[in-house]
Image (spheres, rainbow, N blue to C red):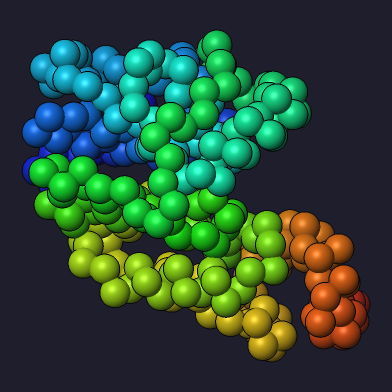
Length: 273
Ligand SMILES: [Zn+2]
């Protein structure tokens, strides 16, 4: 299990199975912050062991859930008695969608999973001032998506709002999502921790993600510049997920046109190969 030391007080734990996922730990002055909890109690053993080894066994744990997609909170129950910070919508989603996702993704479960929602919710921001740790509502990938910044070490933990090669969209909230990503460019950080990419140290991926979202907002995609992976996620995930919402909105005509454009493009590339 790769564990990477970051700054003066951070540790990045990166899991590989069933897909690359990050959990970030901040060893604070009076708290240990665990940012996201992956897939169940067993998966959090390595995190708890590290906390013990660092001499923080008696220090109160504060868990943070970047959002309520199952791969970011199933390990909450490993931290009994912990404060669990999350957006109000995150708590709602755990309560409303938790059981369904537990059934749907049962084969991803790592050890026991009890669905434990955040017990310290917030609307806009929530801070541990003395610790220089701040949580910020940052809707994008999902409505409940939130970000943590370690202001002392300059570490920005963004969950799935930033993702390679392009983000997974769940809503046609392009303006809101772009606003969130642009807000990241105005914050002071050196390290960028995303849900599912290796550690980043610059804003390149954020800028690429913004360009993709602006393409949606303006319905002007440069399809030929898409890599195979981008095209696949765009067509198989994002357009399928958003189809009903877009068809019932002002975007209907633009979507139909875009789908035709994609069909022509794929016919063209098949005939060329
Ligand atoms: Zn995720």
